[in-house]
Length: 329
Image (cartoon, rainbow, N blue to C red; front, side, top):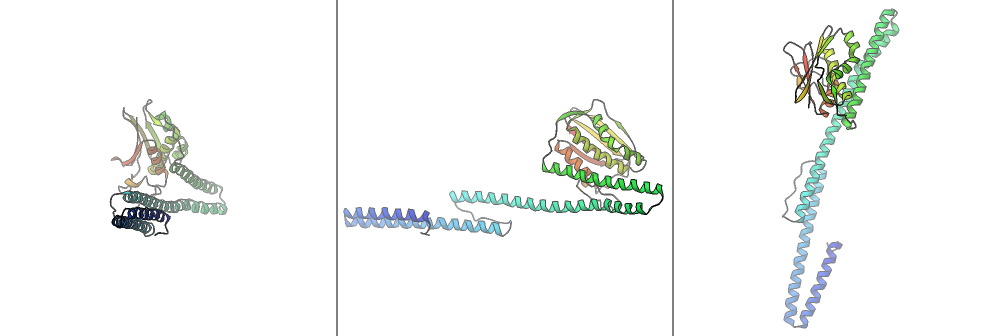
């Protein structure tokens, strides 16, 4: 222990003071010298024991830290008496808890990334395989009408993959926190008109009709471009759920507290077991005959909640699903 400079220097100084004091005491008499020497020796011994115990506690604390860092997440420090070491122990315990939480978060993020990559591969594999088969059929098909029909089918599959990748990029930007939302007032009717425009061809292909009942003065606050994106994804989901000859109904209610947009279809609705999970990324229904929900609805929820809104889904008594989007005033 004397090899430690922090111990050696105080020990040498204490010994020097004790020797000098004892020599001075001997000048006044043998008894005084013996008493002073004994007291000095006792004080030096007490100082040595105190330093030794202090460093033993530090060594034990270091050992406990080493165990906590190398033997997993569960750890417990032996409590020390009040003092500087106890404060140090408390701060180290807090630091290790923070490290533990960060490690757990990193593990969860790694697992989420792995699952997401598997889901992305699954989502792309189906349309890619279908497009490959369709292109092979086009090459072998001699009938012009059949070739045109297969070509349209291939274009639809490629558009689906393009939409998926675009949505993934948008979702990744939102997750990274690099998107800055504007806070402007926008009429709901304008949002719906802009959101439905890219879907008019899909409506025509599926022979789905739609009508809206929206007050002209109804408005909300948020980023028009991103909110329009979220509404478009919900509309697209309802169009696909409505099926051929279906109907989409869009409504809006404005109160002093909030603006509420409802989007409903007259399809088969959503299975009760799936209702709480339709906004999860790449969620696949347990019903083999039901389609998955991909990332469109997950993207919509992220956009809406990041701007202070909320979105829920429920089944209507008359049939079909109804999405309710609400933005506070």
